[in-house]
Image 1 (cartoon, rainbow, N blue to C red):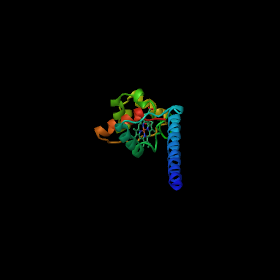
Image 2 (cartoon, rainbow, N blue to C red):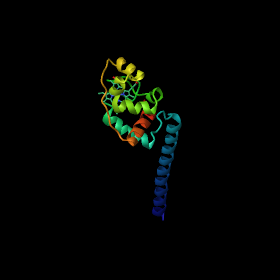
Image 3 (cartoon, helix red, strand yellow):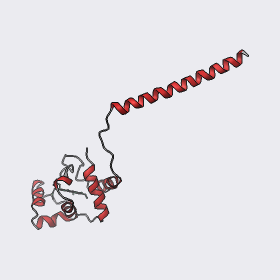
Length: 138
Ligand code: HEC
């Protein structure tokens, strides 16, 4: 009889520990959530695809920040230029420069006439890339 009592007591004690462990974890999680605000917004599905394109083709010369690498930092480019301009520039910046596009010439001069590689991307790849240029950044 006493053995049975001890067994039950152990059983409850064990569950008591498990439950208190769970609840204390929960309060920690809540504290974390409220204590540290999430600064980085999540990328849209298009921007996630665009990030891969960016890493594969652009990250050798561009950072997704306002720091320059070989070329300028990419933060704010979707505000600085419209979509059509960006697509033309990424497709063939040298052609735009030769045609005397003022903005293309200005950035070309600013970067000591470093030639940017030309890229032929599909329409949906441009959409994704530009989504990343807009949403990405540190
Ligand atoms: C070989 C290095 C190189 C690569 C690779 C490269 N760029 Fe560039 N990019 C440059 C340089 C240098 C400039 C400055 C303008 C110039 O010299 O023509 C520039 C300028 C730009 C600009 C204008 C920025 C501004 O602030 O005016 C955009 C937008 C841009 N690049 C996007 C891209 C994208 C998107 C990719 C990838 C698909 C890419 N670049 C790949 C070197 C590069």
